[in-house]
Length: 594
Ligand SMILES: Cc1cc2nc3c(=O)[nH]c(=O)nc-3n(C[C@H](O)[C@H](O)[C@H](O)COP(=O)(O)OP(=O)(O)OC[C@H]3O[C@@H](n4cnc5c(N)ncnc54)[C@H](O)[C@@H]3O)c2cc1C
Image (tube, rainbow, N blue to C red; front, side, top):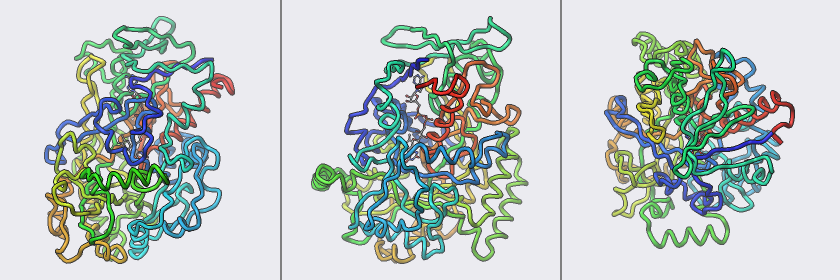
């Protein structure tokens, strides 16, 4: 059996802009690497348009992501089975999280400095293709202060991250190969080692137009190949066994729709012949909106602001550090995080507050249509009520944010603080995101031209409960920066500046809500547009990842994940892909893909 991978982007596996971890923000928006999508104006964000990067190169988004290597929770994966996907639970998927990576054990000094002693031996992966590690540095006071502050607030890290039961404030691993100090991604972990196999072929710079479906051989249409644009020519490629769609959360529903699989009304309006009617295609889009607030740090605390300002001296020092020791800011991605219960719901009166909000949410006319809503809401409500589950993802970025701009050069604005370029101040930014938002949206084609971008509407913060929770999480940033030991690194009592547009105080919930909407951006974790669910509950693929109503067609990417991931999503995408590989090999004979 042979495999052909068709990729619209190019191969950049040895490009230092991709391999150098700290350069990740700088490649966003570049047509060489990024599809550079944007949403329609978001009602829940007062009409703001949000830019959504997605990788367009061999390795896809794993080659441009923020390198946070974060595991899922058992509860969130078990929910997949409860939603109607038999065989998809922590027991079956958990081992694949382990299989996909190798976690390098940090040195004793790093364990101490980054407070990693809660990690358990033999829980993380030991021989998987994706390399994960922790930055080996001990001079930066911010990471340890971050973890200690969460412990002081009652959120000490506990449970190994890959055990399925982690919670607390922590330093997460990064998908950085410690041997070379470079990004480890799908291109280096999976593609490079397989590249020389005689039965693997890769076609780059090739845009798939549609999947070719044969209706003549039986009642059910069969995927028999793809139509591709390559070097200004239209090429037809046939598949003997099956077509596997892995075009990502926006690319996969787009290709299904261009091939006549989707909502009848939409397809007919665009003169696309309806091959399989399924209104769920492109629906159920979930993403993590993140709102943030920057605080000026005490003089002498080093952040990445000087780099964001393109300060020549700071760039020279960071370049030297990376070149000589593979250390410093260029060696890192995002690593100061937390996965915690919502603090407002666990303190005194917390239960009552939550109950009141849940009652209000139940009374609000259903803002998300579809049969999945009931299952989704029931999971999210139970998780919010459970003090040992992480429902909130609060993380820190060591630079000021420019949250109010939609300027192209500020894409991924966190850390690209344009308004701070003239004034050499330094900040930390505290970012708050809901792990499991109830707001769901869609991504659809609006014309039949394959080179057009889909219309993306995540409906960020459109569900009233999401805004209530996210505003409370952002408000909690005030408590975090006033708690020791972080407090001594941040200018206190009105002495310190905040980012442009930020209120001087977020204690008032209405002020917090307004600013939560104003400052919201995407965390770049969109999922679920071709959800694995029973068809009558909003599904596009079955538990074997086969597209309903079509033979020989599977989807294997972030679009099949039925529920937003608890934190960052790459480990779950890899785990699903590993499991899919076994399903596919099992069907076509063990080892068939070797
Ligand atoms: C900027 C950014 C930061 C992120 N940060 C993190 C992080 O820190 N931690 C984390 O865990 N996750 C992070 N993520 C999310 C994570 O990287 C993605 O969820 C994951 O990589 C998605 O994988 P995928 O296979 O679904 O899609 P992708 O990796 O996007 O792959 C889709 C591929 O299909 C190709 N394609 C699409 N359409 C066509 C077509 N018509 N013809 C041919 N080829 C096509 C694309 O070019 C791409 O290579 C981030 C994502 C982004 C974009």
